[in-house]
Picture 1 (tube, rainbow, N blue to C red):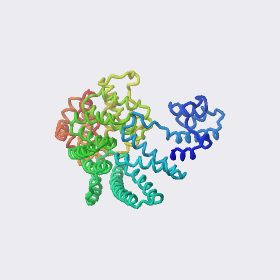
Picture 2: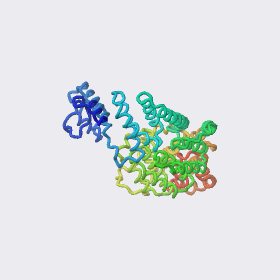
Picture 3: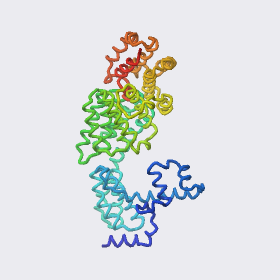
Picture 4: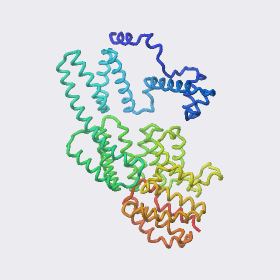
Length: 499
């Protein structure tokens, strides 16, 4: 009863009458709800459209006041999100509940309502232990230590909390360190997918520091971030066999925990899937994809990443129709437009390749004949970020352009482009970092030289094709992002387009 009385004194009706939230029962014809529904349904995408729709008289001050009012209401409504939704995993639900509880506790303490705050902190602390919420555990333990000291004068309790805080600080510092190292590496891959041998040295330095500390920490966050650094080290030299082994060992450790640490499982599995594609372990890769999709919510970043991997696996196994279905599922998802531009551009590259298969009648779609002609110039403009990634994703961008031009029988344009591609090969696609790409571009360059004649081109490229077969994907010294479709399959498609 004391705790209820404390809350009622704090939250009397007079104080809560002016709380502004997004009310489900609000009038749908109000300007506030028109703005909310217009944005939610995608009808209003910018301030200019919203201003014209809500205030034809162009009252910008009223519009911006309304906009800020909606923002404040949405933020206030955050406290009422359904945390029991089936869309959330157990750890996700627990994280949201703990963060919400801590926010309430800190508000209560600021208002001087300590009985409820301490009761909630005591109940919440075991949850942070169960799910390894290190940062939140530190906050709650400090609150409880302060109460034990200032209000209870309990020396024994203070010492207990001191020990917990010391251990938690050690764990947090270790987790923050490996997280920092991993993020420094991750930054280098966002806009550039090329092979990066220098990352081997960088990650080796981080690994040396991690191993020198001889820590016994086994938290999911620590295992995940430290393992990702080891994976980055091996991926930087395209060592897919060892990268897969590291991924699988980390997954084994994390799956032994008492809870499903979905973030670690999903991200480590995605590394393993990429390795499986390169090593042609397609069944294992498919199983990992299905397992990952079962524990994540559709529309989140990792869901799109898994669809990328699934689409790539389908291309490598010649399941072109399934690849098209995955593509349409992704780009038609309501959250696709919210993805970072870099991510959407990767899907544009997939779109170009898939359109090649559509044109070759290898994919059945409802696309009309008039719209089947893929606009190459528009495509190039839409992948501007990765067109600058000269040793990375610009390679498949160039190759798919040539493939599409050959299919469209635009031989003069192919000839015009080949001179630039020859210079591009000499400057960016060297044998050391991109051997298979270097070989394949050399094969492309022979197509116009042999007057687009199928028999002559095949005879002129026997040597190069043999080298391709001798250097398969699993031992190729190139980034796994470059060869979206195995070059042997691309070559087969191109040869069929020749005279």
